[in-house]
Every structure is written in C-alpha cells, then in structure tokens.
Length: 463
Ligand code: ARG
Image (cartoon, rainbow, N blue to C red; front, top):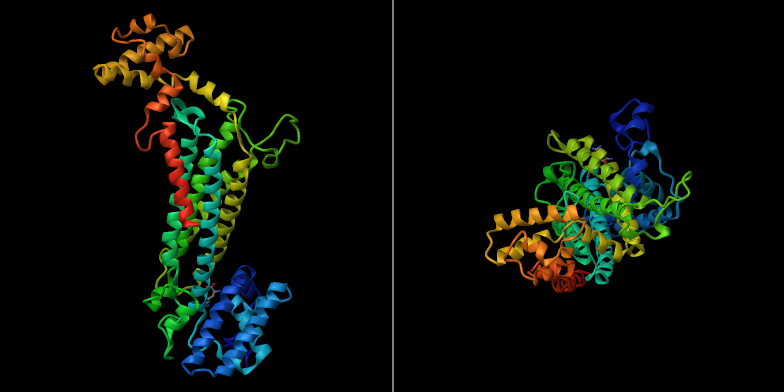
C-alpha cells in the first residue's frame, strides 16, 4: 500500500522525512511554470491519442481538466502542496482527482525529466522575446533623444579626461550599438532554446511510438532534440541566456555610470526628471540618480546568477541529476531583474534634459581640439610626431596663459609653428573639429544624422 500521495509510493515503506520534503520541494519557485507545464501536457496527450496510446475521449477529458486547472491557478484558487514537490506532480495529481482514470494515463511515455526541460525551454523562449522587446523599447527612446541632440557638442573622454569634442547623438548612438548587439545575442541564444526535449523521457527515450514531430509542431519548437541523454540534462541554453543577460546588465551599468556622472554637481550635463529621482532624508538639497545606481548595482546579481549556473552544471555526469532543480531560481531572478531594469531605465531616458551650454563649455575647457591642431600641421607636411610635440608645447603655453587654443593669437601660435596660417581657427573651434571627422562612423553631425536614420530603420525593420 502506498505510504503517501507520492507517485513513487509503491516502492517505499516509510513516509518522506519532513526535513527532506522541505529541502527537496521546488513548488515554491517552479509553480511559475504552470502555463508551460499545461501547454506541454496538452500537446503530449493529443499526441498520445493520435498514436492510439490513449483514446480521443481521454485526451479530451485531460485537455478540459488541464484548462480548468489553469483557470484555477490564474484565479489564485489553486492550492499548491509541498508534499507533491513540484509543479508537474501538483498539476497531475489535481487532474487525476478531477477526471479520474484518464488523468493517470497522461504521464505515459514521459518523465518529469523531459517535462521540466520542455517547460523551462517554453518559458525561456517567451522570456527571450519579452526581453528583446524591452531592449528595443529602450533603443527607441534613445534614438528619439538622439534626434534632438545631433548638433549638441560635449567632450568625449578617454581615461575620463577630456579627449575630443563629439556630438551627443553620436554618444547616444554608441549606447544603441551596444543594445543592438544585446538583441542579436538573445536572438541567437533563442535558436538553441527553441529545441524540444519532450519524448526523451527519463533519459533513454520510451518504448511508445511517440510522434515527436507532432508535439514539436503543436508547441512551436523549431525541431525535436536529437539526443535523449543530452536533452534531459544540459542547461547550457540557460547559461547562454544568463551570459547574454550579464552583458546587457554590464552595458546598462556603463550607461548608468555615465548618467550618474553627468547628473553630478561637477558635470551638470543633464537633469533627470524628478519622477525618476529620490531625495535624501537628511540633506534637503539632494536629488539622487537612484534608478541608475540601483540598475548598476543589480548587474551584480545577474552576473552572480551566471556564475551559479555555470558551477551548477560543471561536473554533472550524464544524464539528469537533481542538481538541475537549482537552475530555476537564478534564471527566474535573471529574467525578472533584467526585465525590470530595462523597463525603468527606458522610462527614465525621456525624462532626461540635456544641458547643452554646460556641455559646450566643458568641451571648450579641456583643450579638446589639440588633436585637430596636430592634424592641421600634418596637412602642412609636418610629420605627425613633430606636430604632436609642437602642439604639446602650444597647449602647455595656453594653460599658462589660462586660455583655450582658439584664443591664442596667430602670432602666439606661429611662435610654435611658423607654417600656421589664420585658417587654423577653423579647426580650433569645436564645430570645426567635429565637422572634420566626417568619415563613416565619425562624429561629424552630417554623418551622425545618417547614422541615426540608419539605426532607426534597422529598429523599424525588426519591430
Ligand atoms: N523538480 C525537478 C526539477 O526541477 C523536476 C524533475 C524531477 N526529476 C526527478 N527525476 N526527480 O528538475
């Protein structure tokens, strides 16, 4: 006689220890897979009916029973039982309670090992699509902001030192490039997610003549998996997703860092909308860029989740091992964290106003056109290394005078290079500098406008 509700009760004479039950359960986190579990079970039962393992009437009653269970879960009236361990056994037990004998036939030719692998792939397929949409929504907002800032000049930095003037839209388009690659990475990962393990059973397949093409089509997978051992065991597709997610968070945290710097008193390049900032409980003057800081901070847990999954998978022998139950919390946390970060970050972008005059003044300050002067000299046949030296001396002199390069007189400039003529002032202005960088990929506003149009078209074409 069975000692419990457990499906393996037949083999056991003692009930499960309470500590073991609490330790091994996954229902507290895998109940999130209920829709995918039901979707997979309906496809499986339809297929069992088609191959004659169960009757059409049984398949119909299974399907109706499962739809009813889904409605109860949706409505919050379904009671999950820890004794039944996971989402798969909870649903199956309830189905059998509701429809009787037919419910007991659903698990024919299937194991929880291929069932859970199928569920998680269905879940991650949707999650990938959702995150791709969120990335694209952020791209859309960035491109909108960039449209107004093609002519806005600010210092570009290397080593966080003023380097050369750039167009603000060019800077925002650099962020867009990162996000576009993030989308591509997820699209690529999705190809390997969308392969169907169902039919692999516990590890070796089943003696029933399953029609795997049929379930594959019903569940809209690209193809059935090729090897039953591999398909119940490997979670590399989750590792890829966590890796692509880590790159997304790494990119967001870089953008956040710039936003935090730009919003600081020392830069004052931007003002973030009040609705996207918080204040201090002690310092009345404070307006803090908390969204950017929290997103930057959340990158830590997503990167941590990637580590957790890699270590979880490492050294596991074929085929399924219970270790794999530990994949769910890190991957669900990854999906939630990336989705919520993208959502709030994207919403903050249109609230940012750009302080064009401050940016312009900052670009004037750091001798950002020194390279332009060197390149001017090269065009007058001065070897680049000599030009570099001449300009170094000129900048040193200008710093002593407390003047930008463009305010040195022609006489003063000629003191460093006799070949300098008064057309030099064309390249010493910020406008002259950016306009001259007009090759493909450069920061000249004409090129940036084209790049922006191009980016908008690429985004439109995928949406
Ligand atoms: N809860 C399990 C998991 O998440 C389901 C599969 C259990 N399989 C088993 N043979 N105990 O991986």
